[in-house]
Length: 299
Ligand SMILES: NC(=O)c1ccc[n+]([C@@H]2O[C@H](COP(=O)([O-])OP(=O)(O)OC[C@H]3O[C@@H](n4cnc5c(N)ncnc54)[C@H](OP(=O)(O)O)[C@@H]3O)[C@@H](O)[C@H]2O)c1
Image 1 (spheres, rainbow, N blue to C red):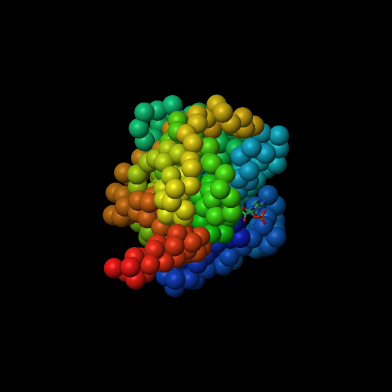
Image 2 (spheres, helix red, strand yellow):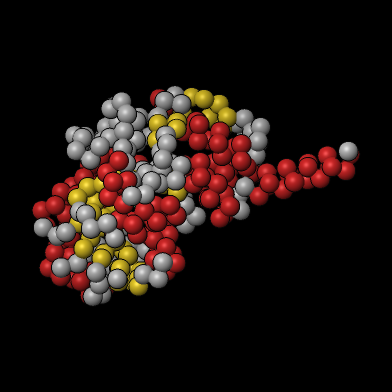
């Protein structure tokens, strides 16, 4: 199997390329310079003869998108459409990455794939338009919606919090009334490789097992990186951001589990994996080893 990965320089794309190599899947990584998805001719030249295209390329700056609607739409709607048309023409399978932000987050419980779409911001709207463009192209595609990603090769809430508390003693203020499933990109890359082999197509929701508030998530990072660092609970209306965000857009992953026979690891395992990979949990581990050695000396 030969896979071309678009957006290979991004947070998820990077880990997808690594995972392909670990699993001996032949892989052509394409970044925005050689595989610009907004330019159909350049895209056609860049994409090699292959079995699958995995599209991790996207306009992902959620707040900036509110003021840059046309740019977000050019990448997230038109770019997705160009990729899908190319795949349809060449008989290539497409795995496209989409988002929980297509939902308004007012549902109690996890969203299933058939739930009504109602994006609250430009990013979510353009991502949904991208899904529609893929559907209209007639290509055979898996459209994988996911959420709250964190990984070594990009910026994320998890990385920001872990770095901030190692540098400063200032209390964190974190929201208690928005719920998510924080998803480690290394685990998501494993899920993507499983999806390529499952023989299905259509929309599928994939996220870490378990849900938490952003406050719970910050507390879990603090417990692992710098126990005792103060975390203050606040409500989302304390933060004014240009883009509105869904309060509870957790994803029901039953279809993914049925398709692949595999469940995603718990979000806490993702945090552990991320801290081990980045070395950001080292300070706490060294401190607890020192404490244990001091205690042993005293006994
Ligand atoms: N991050 C999250 O929390 C989250 C949540 C749900 C869903 N998702 C989805 O997951 C996917 C991956 O997200 P991510 O967090 O890994 O994003 P990311 O780190 O921002 O990476 C996006 C990549 O897209 C590339 N790109 C942008 N415009 C392009 C263009 N015109 N042509 C080709 N490449 C282009 C960027 O390249 P340059 O840097 O060179 O411009 C970058 O490498 C996206 O589809 C996103 O919508 C993300």
